[in-house]
Length: 116
Image: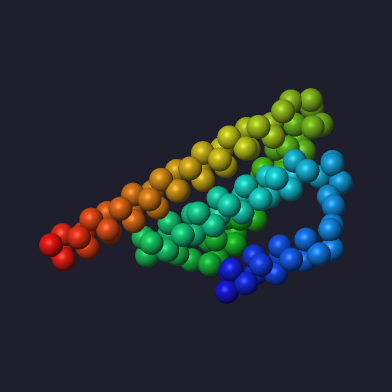
């Protein structure tokens, strides 16, 4: 079902050829990074048996609001706080992906030991 949403969203943007004003570019990129962080965190939590849709949605909203707030505040005071949010969210994405990879490798090794 999530794949259907991705396909429909992509087609809606592609077919309408919607554009984003340049001013909103940094905020949209932070929202996308926050979404990627939430998805990776959700996959990780699902593999660990700790998934909760409430935590996924609230985490996405809070990450997006905080990152956008930092970018907005940085714009107003002349400091590039946007980069702080990118570094933090990017680091979390890499951490979650590495933990997902480690979990999958451990499961694969366990299944090989059972078969062998």
